Length: 169
Image (cartoon, rainbow, N blue to C red):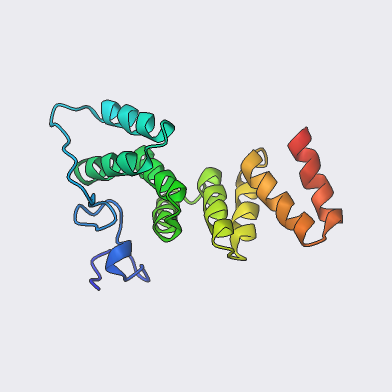
C-alpha cells in the first residue's frame, strides 16, 4: 500500500485512497465512461442524478467516478456514496463518507448517512454517528429516527421519548 495520502494515520489500503486522487481505484470506473470536454459539471451532475433517480445506480456511479477523476466535486462524491449504498457496497460507501467527513466534519448529513451505512453492516458504532449528527443539527430527521430507533431497541424509553417528540414536532 502506498502512503501518498498526505494525512497521518490515513487508511493505507490502495482500495481506500482519497477520492480526489485521480488514480484512485474507487473512482476508476469498471467500464469506460467518456466525459466530453465540453460537458459542464452541472450537466454531469444532472445526468448522474437522473440515472440515480431512475435506479440506474451502476451507471450513475460510473459517471460520478469518471467525472470525479477529472473534476473533484463534493456533490458527485456524495452521490457516488449513495449509489454504492444502494448497490449494497457498504465498505466502499463508508470509505467515501469517512473521507468526506475529514474535509467536512461539521456536516450533520454526512454523520447521519454514515450511521445508516453502519446500521446496514450491523455495526454498533452507528448510534454514535446518529448522535453526532443530532448534536450538529437537532432538526436532522434521519439522524433523529436512527438515534430514537437505537434507544427504543436498547429499552431506554426514558431517553427515547424526548427524541421521538422532536420527530413529531
